[in-house]
Image (tube, rainbow, N blue to C red; front, side, top):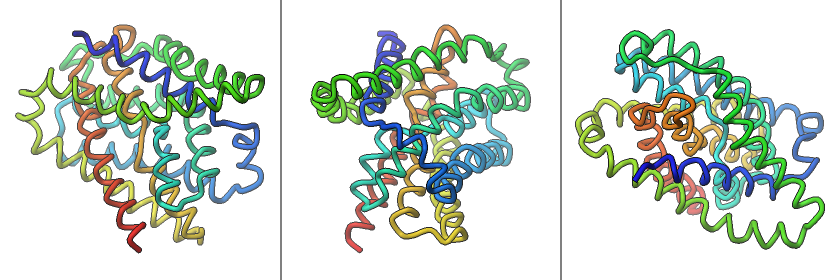
Length: 283
């Protein structure tokens, strides 16, 4: 079974579900609460890719893994982060805003950051990998921006149907992502196990550093506890489905090896953040 058959529709469904939860106010929060939004976006869109770049260089990752690690770091926040923020007693409205804004902004930042990663890692020479920027933009617009817009329209004109649809999709989002990661894991079991020590350490370091950096930036900015918890989750939880879609899409990289870091990330990320939420709830 070719996993791409599942990847693309799952990503679109996740983005459509995100659109069902959005309001106009979610896009205007930057004007009303600029400090919290800017700290969250800076941690997610600037600091996290820089940390991933530094880790990939420091650990001398093979070119394809290098690109894969940077890819997961420059993706937008995952739609499940809103649920995690609620469970952690965070600022859910801020979480929705950060997820929405990062999903739009990364349409333009992913090509720039990925282009640098491909060039720096030597993936063009070693693996014949190149980044078709036009295809990447089109795929992101079709699979991410369009479903979000359709979700927003449905909520605006058919709010009751949108509420019922969201109730269903929000329940299947997390299992769908885990199913996707599981299928990729089974198909690439041998390679993942052979490289789990180096790659697993790198991904775990990325997740933990994301949490530390997000918490540090939030404290330096003197944000409240609920806002800090939300920013930690938003910076720590990236859209693994999008990273897998970009890596394995026949229109972009068409390379499942580049998707392996995102698969490991999806598995470890949820474990770490569940532990984080459990710790907060006990406190």
